[in-house]
Length: 253
Image 1 (cartoon, one colour):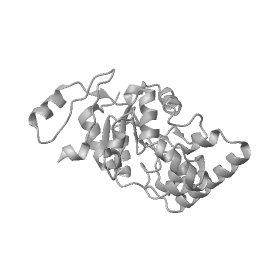
Image 2 (cartoon, rainbow, N blue to C red):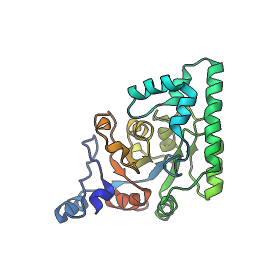
Image 3 (cartoon, one colour):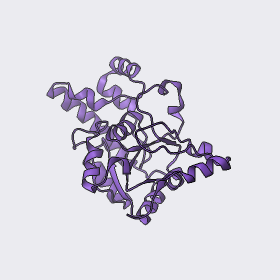
Image 4 (tube, helix red, strand yellow):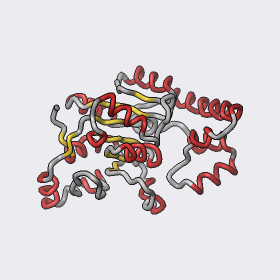
């Protein structure tokens, strides 16, 4: 049933509103189709946990960087997740170097087990067939992005790693991509698995956002009151194809 398939989250915004869509309601379907669709000119993806299967043990990495006590304290204060890079920025150079080395070690181990996310190849092929641009923003390093491109034969351009500063959740990377493409942010959708990084980045830039929530983590009441909510929420990338066709104008410019 498409109600559970898309689980779209529609909120009043400063631009045209997309109708709530359910497959078992002819009336809602007609309403959805009667509203002018938004022109989509680009899709920007997160990498880890979105285009690739999550393989990095982030809690273990955070504990290794922060220590058990500080990790638990910061986690309790940040229900949407820990911004480890933000915390490291305030440390002295020696502490930063040690922290970045720990993170790099975890990321290197993750590269050995890198797998493409189910539905990613098909979705990217669909976007290519519609001549819709594909970009990538990750908080991982450039070497990981290069390996991803080589291993899976996909091309995302621009593909921005954490060497681009400021990194997400700052909107700067997404705004940079929009500028490079010569499109407006509200002609782009950001797709990622992080509420605090991907959704916040997209919302701050003025783009549409789609949260990939495979296990229903963000259905928890603790996330209901966070400031930035996604426009759409899906449980797999295989759902995005139909979501885009339902809510966006995908015709060539």
